[in-house]
Amino acid sequence: TPTLSSTQTPNAVCSGSTFNYIPTSATAGATFTWNRAVVTSISNGAGNGTYNPAEILVNTSLNPVNVPYTYTISANNCSSTAIVTVPINPVPNIANQTLAACSNTVFNLTPVSVPSNTTYTWTAPVIAPVGAISGGSAQTTGQASISQLLTNQTINSATATYTVTPTAAGCTGASFTATVTLNPVPAAANQLLAAICSGNAFNYSPASMPAGISYTCSN
Image (cartoon, rainbow, N blue to C red; front, side, top):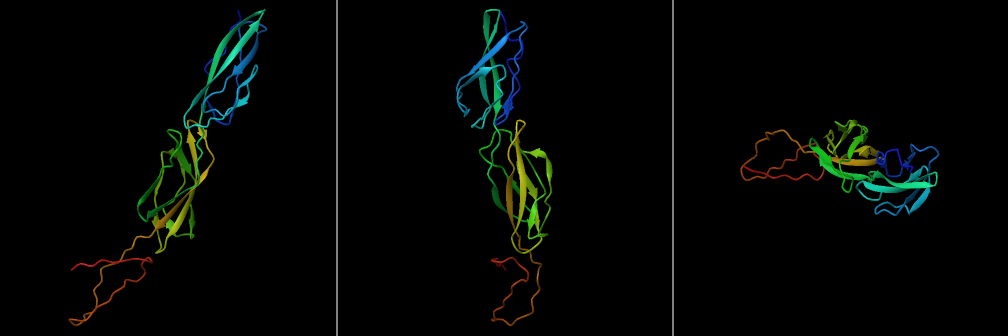
């Protein structure tokens, strides 16, 4: 009776990529047919064919999904069946992200609804206005979140826009943007004001401060 000699547990495939499987048998002249039922979280309908499936399977979930193929191996009027199971790993699919942060504070962005252990790399950010923010740099090693310490060099809000690429279990998703609005932190040196007469009001407004700033006073 012919049997399958090739592995029944092929390597995982990324969602949206082609699953190729070349069946083999120690029996000369063996032929191979396969059937695949509908699988939860795989968008493809049922399928069948001969030899190599060469199918593009789409995982609609956030977790790996095992897809079984039932192979029939035939030769010399005899046959046997074997189940070949391939894991289909999800690909991260993330919309563009925005967040606000204060200057000189580490911002941290962790997208939600992504596959477990998704990591991120990114390009050096595009700064607007040009030169308004320092501290941004590219990251080529996968990180669990998008995070950096940025400094706003101005008294106005500015943005740093990163192009981020997500990867999960070796499956790379489409790049998305992460735009950080970096708000300035007000800072004023201690001041010694000119003397005024008792009973008269004094007024002081520090120069070069962010718009919309408010103050509290104490004796």
